[in-house]
Length: 439
Picture (tube, rainbow, N blue to C red):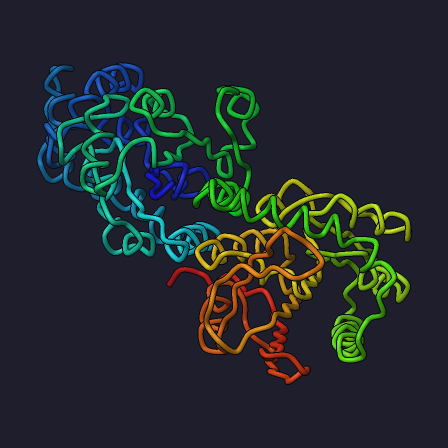
């Protein structure tokens, strides 16, 4: 997948907890019967959305004409101002998790589009809002004279993005039949429930679509579906075979002193902050997980190799056969994450996606340790005399590694150490970035 197109209302912004100026308010201010006003206003919905009424005062005037009622322009202007002000509140209070979602997708290389069924006054605050800079294409129904679920409006946005439908997600809460409309065009629809999850009927409906209750869960899912799956599958298959073959040898190998010092340093930091839970990525035979567990932490371990997982479980560790692309399947968040010489097997093109997955399962304020060989920039397969299965390695200089990490984590400490190899060992201790409120 290369792109994602978002719905606006109840997907990126919400009205539920904001001051509202509803049709009943307008009817009261105009001094007309609410039910009669509501019926006429609803009948104008399509025309308002395709831009037939550039100013909402014109729509109010049309309703009054149909009711045979006359009101002065000054009153209509005042009512229009109240409606526009209420809509503006949605853009003034965008939730930080929405900004983070858009930022994570943008940093991962996604093109981002927006399609909204709306009248002009409903989106008057869009361009000055915190979400607007993230869009590569914006399609508003009142500007283009088309509405969802008409296929033309989706295809128009895809054309602006320069993307094909089968390489694009569509994300929306499900209103206006937007999800089946996106599917008919060939996009992959995802249902956003983070603003509407408290409505039972919304949670139970549209079960044909993947649904997400939090933006970070959806981002992790989207990134897991991105990339060159053919090459990624070969890399993972070779790694799995190598480490299955190597498992018994690694289970009886001694841990080098410098590696023991690394984990002791991280444990001390975690304990000083009262951290109690830890996820190990690429746990191997489980000796690091066992160390943390014996020192009082609740540990979950994952590894690509089924044989390595067996060795972990034999040591009493809660271990799972899982790769870095599906961490969300664990269904938990952790206060610490430990990754010693495992993330160097991730292709560079996939690292932003894997880091987003790690970020998604790390608690607020959580600590993340990443240890990798490097000091040079390279990607290569390596075969040794013990196995016919090549292992993929990605090495980074300090500068390129820190740049990749900066999108999700604040670096607390970085060390580059000579450990007697052709490449240096780089250790990074990080903290999950706090979610910044939209300014």
